[in-house]
Length: 150
Image 1 (tube, rainbow, N blue to C red):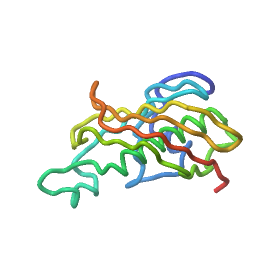
Image 2 (cartoon, rainbow, N blue to C red; image 1 turned 120 degrees about the vertical axis):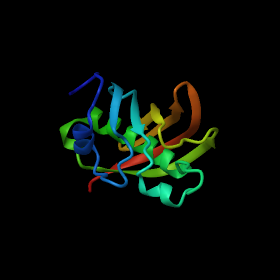
Image 3 (spheres, rainbow, N blue to C red; image 1 turned 90 degrees about the vertical axis):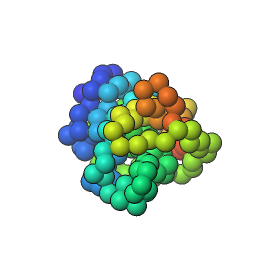
Image 4 (tube, one colour; image 1 turned 90 degrees about the horizontal axis):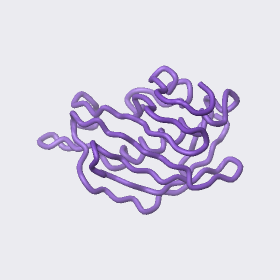
């Protein structure tokens, strides 16, 4: 799929970014607007390894993994926007600012990750990210990343 479209499935996500289990934190892209924004979906399940220790009596998705899911959604948007020559390149965090965690994300939640491009210059992109369960804002951050050859 080039340009605008919706519903980038898991097989295409794995072509766009190099992450794999247990660190692939985007199940699909449910909305995509080339060069502007994307919405990713992460179905949070109890069988994920982080819940063995975070926390056994009250499993909560770690905030750093929520921000990582934002970055992976943004990376999918960037690579899909740039096209075939960008596939397989790595997208590295440069900054994470204004991170706020408002409500826990727990197993059974469908976490929707909204990322919107603030701006980009050459291979550096800056985004606003939000993680929501239903209409409830669970986390937000402003972050920037650089695209590099792997």
